[in-house]
Image (tube, rainbow, N blue to C red; front, side, top):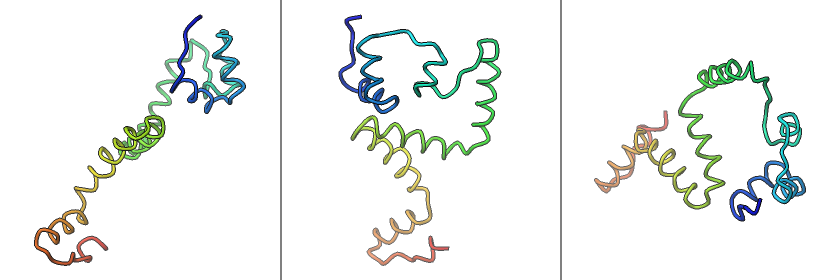
Length: 126
Protein backbone atom coordinates (compact mmCIF):
# COMPACT_ATOMS: atom_id res chain seq x y z
CA UNK A 1 0.00 0.00 0.00
CA UNK A 2 2.90 2.35 0.59
CA UNK A 3 1.54 3.39 3.99
CA UNK A 4 2.86 2.66 7.47
CA UNK A 5 2.72 3.58 11.12
CA UNK A 6 6.26 3.54 12.43
CA UNK A 7 5.25 4.40 15.97
CA UNK A 8 2.29 3.47 18.11
CA UNK A 9 0.56 1.20 15.59
CA UNK A 10 3.52 -1.09 15.02
CA UNK A 11 4.34 -1.87 18.62
CA UNK A 12 0.69 -1.94 19.71
CA UNK A 13 -0.06 -4.54 17.03
CA UNK A 14 3.06 -6.48 18.06
CA UNK A 15 1.81 -6.52 21.66
CA UNK A 16 -1.56 -7.78 20.45
CA UNK A 17 -0.60 -10.52 18.00
CA UNK A 18 3.14 -11.10 18.39
CA UNK A 19 6.15 -9.85 16.48
CA UNK A 20 6.07 -12.29 13.57
CA UNK A 21 2.35 -11.90 12.93
CA UNK A 22 2.55 -8.09 13.25
CA UNK A 23 5.31 -7.99 10.65
CA UNK A 24 3.23 -10.15 8.33
CA UNK A 25 0.23 -7.87 8.74
CA UNK A 26 2.23 -4.68 8.17
CA UNK A 27 4.49 -5.96 5.39
CA UNK A 28 1.90 -7.82 3.31
CA UNK A 29 -1.34 -5.88 3.99
CA UNK A 30 -3.45 -8.97 3.46
CA UNK A 31 -7.18 -9.15 4.09
CA UNK A 32 -8.10 -11.53 6.92
CA UNK A 33 -11.45 -13.12 7.64
CA UNK A 34 -13.13 -12.55 10.98
CA UNK A 35 -12.27 -16.11 12.07
CA UNK A 36 -8.60 -15.58 11.09
CA UNK A 37 -8.53 -12.30 13.02
CA UNK A 38 -9.96 -14.07 16.07
CA UNK A 39 -7.49 -16.95 15.79
CA UNK A 40 -4.52 -14.55 15.79
CA UNK A 41 -5.87 -12.53 18.73
CA UNK A 42 -6.75 -9.44 16.73
CA UNK A 43 -10.39 -9.58 17.89
CA UNK A 44 -11.92 -11.23 20.96
CA UNK A 45 -15.14 -12.49 19.48
CA UNK A 46 -16.83 -13.05 16.14
CA UNK A 47 -20.60 -12.86 15.66
CA UNK A 48 -22.63 -13.45 12.53
CA UNK A 49 -23.75 -10.19 10.92
CA UNK A 50 -27.39 -10.95 11.67
CA UNK A 51 -26.58 -11.33 15.40
CA UNK A 52 -24.16 -8.41 15.67
CA UNK A 53 -26.55 -5.83 17.15
CA UNK A 54 -27.98 -8.30 19.69
CA UNK A 55 -24.51 -9.44 20.74
CA UNK A 56 -23.31 -5.84 21.08
CA UNK A 57 -26.36 -4.95 23.18
CA UNK A 58 -25.79 -8.02 25.39
CA UNK A 59 -22.18 -6.95 26.01
CA UNK A 60 -23.34 -3.41 26.82
CA UNK A 61 -25.91 -4.77 29.30
CA UNK A 62 -23.17 -6.84 30.93
CA UNK A 63 -20.92 -3.78 31.22
CA UNK A 64 -23.77 -1.70 32.69
CA UNK A 65 -23.78 -4.11 35.67
CA UNK A 66 -20.21 -3.13 36.50
CA UNK A 67 -19.24 -0.03 38.45
CA UNK A 68 -18.81 2.93 36.09
CA UNK A 69 -16.04 4.48 38.23
CA UNK A 70 -14.11 1.21 38.26
CA UNK A 71 -14.53 0.77 34.50
CA UNK A 72 -13.37 4.34 33.91
CA UNK A 73 -10.30 3.78 36.07
CA UNK A 74 -9.48 0.53 34.26
CA UNK A 75 -9.91 2.20 30.89
CA UNK A 76 -7.58 5.02 31.96
CA UNK A 77 -5.01 2.52 33.23
CA UNK A 78 -4.99 0.64 29.93
CA UNK A 79 -4.72 3.90 27.97
CA UNK A 80 -1.97 5.22 30.25
CA UNK A 81 0.43 2.51 29.16
CA UNK A 82 -0.02 3.33 25.50
CA UNK A 83 0.16 7.09 25.91
CA UNK A 84 3.40 7.28 27.87
CA UNK A 85 3.88 10.16 30.28
CA UNK A 86 0.78 11.94 29.00
CA UNK A 87 -1.37 8.88 29.61
CA UNK A 88 0.07 8.34 33.05
CA UNK A 89 -0.49 12.00 33.93
CA UNK A 90 -4.11 11.78 32.84
CA UNK A 91 -4.58 8.64 34.93
CA UNK A 92 -3.08 10.33 37.96
CA UNK A 93 -4.92 13.62 37.63
CA UNK A 94 -8.29 12.53 36.24
CA UNK A 95 -8.84 9.46 38.36
CA UNK A 96 -6.51 9.19 41.30
CA UNK A 97 -6.01 12.79 42.38
CA UNK A 98 -9.48 14.04 41.41
CA UNK A 99 -11.15 11.29 43.41
CA UNK A 100 -8.74 11.71 46.34
CA UNK A 101 -9.70 15.35 46.88
CA UNK A 102 -13.22 14.25 47.80
CA UNK A 103 -12.15 11.85 50.55
CA UNK A 104 -12.18 12.52 54.28
CA UNK A 105 -8.46 11.80 54.30
CA UNK A 106 -7.72 14.60 51.84
CA UNK A 107 -9.92 17.04 53.73
CA UNK A 108 -8.25 16.27 57.05
CA UNK A 109 -4.74 16.39 55.58
CA UNK A 110 -5.49 19.78 54.01
CA UNK A 111 -6.96 21.11 57.25
CA UNK A 112 -3.94 19.88 59.23
CA UNK A 113 -1.47 21.35 56.74
CA UNK A 114 -3.19 24.74 56.69
CA UNK A 115 -3.40 24.90 60.48
CA UNK A 116 0.16 23.54 60.90
CA UNK A 117 -1.12 20.64 63.03
CA UNK A 118 -0.76 16.89 62.87
CA UNK A 119 -3.68 15.25 61.08
CA UNK A 120 -6.27 13.36 63.08
CA UNK A 121 -6.13 9.82 61.67
CA UNK A 122 -9.49 9.02 63.28
CA UNK A 123 -11.02 11.24 60.60
CA UNK A 124 -10.04 8.81 57.84
CA UNK A 125 -8.96 5.49 59.43
CA UNK A 126 -12.30 3.96 60.29
